[in-house]
Length: 412
Length: 82
Image 1 (cartoon, rainbow over the protein chains, first blue to last red):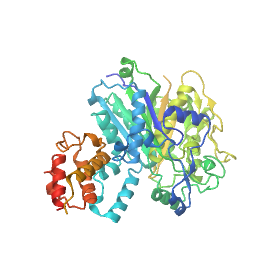
Image 2: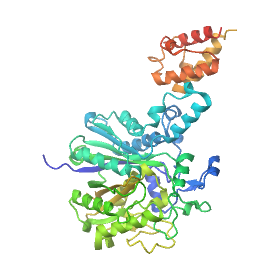
Image 3: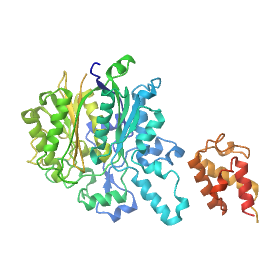
Image 4: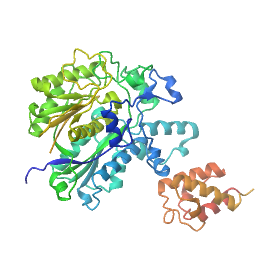
């Protein structure tokens, strides 16, 4: 059997910058921040008073009755997957046994879990919603998308904290490569802008506390960065076997040609300062794609705006790419979206696909003083043109637990 | 004192509309919850709990399977309130 190739034929998103891909991407290229002060009373309990909530509430995109039996993360998954499926041309006449879904979440239905726990304590067991389990299970977003599309090749949910969304796309890529499916709807979502996860991340000293200037709090690579900004939303990519996409005349954005997966074996939350796991993931991803560092012109970085993480990543990139890092335009879009945890690798893959399509690397905002320890070429403030011809780009994502995922996309 | 059938039907219509999104106007005594109104088993649990709260009655789990139509539920609630 000849080697099966995998292409991207549909995109969907709901993010702190817009309720769809086009609105979000325009805001990204314009360097806008999606970070705002929270309006919830509970913010006063916390040392952090801001987050990056979605720009368009699900209630504007979904019927009330449907919403009430879905966790917010599941609402994001359905909203983004509906957009992506439509963008892919709604190929509904395909063999559903060849259609898969891989949608991740880092935390799952934490808002449902805490809401129902409160109902249990206040009103008793009989008042706990019978929809609770399907709403809080981490595979709920994938399951709901799979149900809606009647996908029968397999519905999966890899969970690896903030690498989950990227791992989902990699899993989908392998499903098509390995001939388990012809189309896989893949991505990640997160809905954790809630006092418990925020208090917990704050307890780790992982969140920025720049309460007097939320829009400038997420500042990857800036000397004075003080932690990440929690975001919510999600991104979905429709992956499709190349010949299948061509046969139905689908619009083809680009190819996904490789992935590299490693683990640090170092610490439950801190990045390995040597970054050897990240370097190996990049090496394996390039090998898997049949490329070298010379082919890479752009990278959407994990860069969450934490003091330790950004430098560890930049060092690993420099070591892995060597002198070729000089021609890699590095973008840290979390400076605008905040950190979507399990959704991060997915929306950043959406941005990578758009960057290849428009030949524009998105900006990194809020860098007032570039940290001198950062030795990669960061795209600052305004988008940067990418070269004409055949180009390739990387998306890297890392998660608590020491998970490293690198995806390779290229023009076609 | 027993609740009036019309009051129970009106309340039940509101609950089913809230839980399952079925327009109140299409909810009548002879409608079957599952086949006509597409209230699935999980949503039926919500309807039952909401009825208990609203009408101040107990609907034991073993009776729920007997409530096939809207009329069955209305009659059960009226009798239980007596």
